[in-house]
Image 1 (spheres, rainbow, N blue to C red):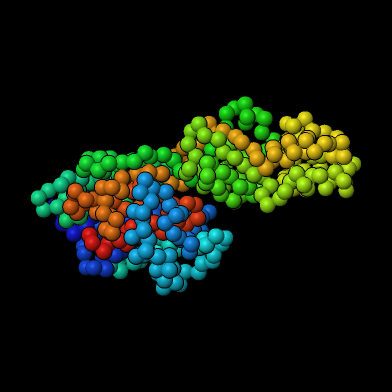
Image 2 (spheres, rainbow, N blue to C red):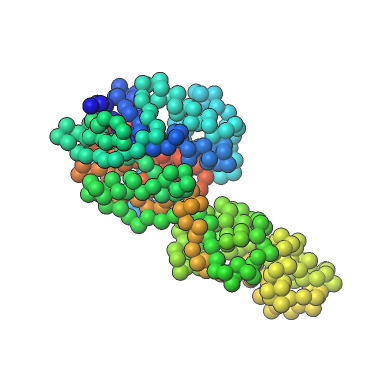
Length: 393
């Protein structure tokens, strides 16, 4: 029999942060993960440079059935707190647009930093460890790991993440544990994920695969203004990933593919000043040329712009500024960056992330029904929720 104060299930961002904080308090901590290496999702994040936080972090950048749940953790452990750790480890970083912080080097620097912190507090890490069972006992918990002795502990922290990117080993194990101990789950679905079109529309748009542009994407009252990419399956890029968290099957999205431009007035001006230019050539001044050609073809618009009435120009401008399209689905967990939904926050204490009715059981990070926007927000939730649980376990 092996005894620890705390067993953390999952060696990702939230799990390692929780272990570090518990170790600081003198707790004996074991971190278990079935993967071959710690922090695998950290390693691939931010194009390999880890968008490790966002300086604009605020509750409104997170989705949850209870939008207020995340406030306590995010206030108690802020982006500045994590940056202080990064600076202490002499990791160079830079800020990109919208408050996003990236390593100058590789994401591996963040993983090494966390592992060094864990090692400094005597935290044990066991990888390639398949958890077979977690049981409540009179003294705390008994964790059964394949091929190992039973592990006994006072507290168990579930930091197993969601279902996104299953090729990296993501499973629904954390959700199963929550149900085992009587906690509720909200609706779970892929988020921050490319959207897909039906085959007929894909055939009409086939010439656009690989075309990118800035766009404003709306679903209902929610809008995002970032880059968009046409793919052979549908749409991707930051603005699409963002809106995917709000979009639901059966809904349409609305695209403005020439944001900040009064395209109708620009076309009218071109009709006066450049009347002999072909309509697709004029459109190519405002949007990518392949898109301009396709819009002209789809609208049956050919010939010099001088021949077009206001009514025709309005229709063409609206096809670009107000394109209504209905995706048929998303690319699913295979490419989703996160899982939307999770352990119902009604069953967790917001200050500690402990289950209200199961003493010593904690859920942190992506497994919880708190999902951030694209751009470092989910990492900040991982750090903040892990830190908060680490003050109590």
